Length: 238
Image (cartoon, rainbow, N blue to C red):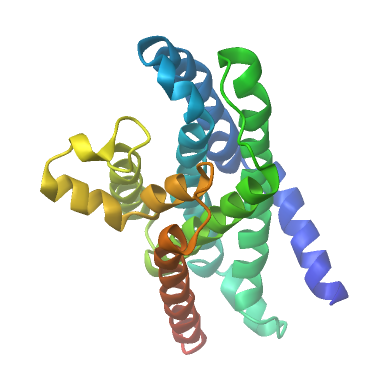
């Protein structure tokens, strides 16, 4: 247990120094929030009631799909994996520590948005904060599980960047955080509902934490966990 906690603390320190994580978990999402928050609330004043959830979906999606996978590639696509094997360290430890570290960073980023939105843009705070944070934690975990698959299955950084963007952009554009999803054509609406971002957005709305919005996220997480386990087992044989 002490070794596991040390690994988590070490990964936390490494991530703090990571320029990639700093950009994807803090700088870009917060700049997007500061710029688009004012635009959204000026053009659509009614969006004040959902601004926090919309900006958080963008922040989590960027950190999970673009921020986490490169860190996994650096570990499992390099000689670091051999160091793990040589020292008898379980291969899953790297994934778990990076997952937990990214989770904490995303929670901090989302907390900043939650605190600043009412002050800067007169956004409406969630009515039940404990349920909101529970929904947020679920959404982060599911998003990071998908990001973990990307980091384990793609070995080339250039390809990873392209694939991560292909996952991230539809998640944002078709999730309903920019405009109501029912305004989209039927095909794009159905495509948007495949993304966890759409379900996470609804889950974080007031009174949104219910089985109707939760079942799909649970299904995605279970499937992602099984795929990650299979990919890690495949890593052992190499």
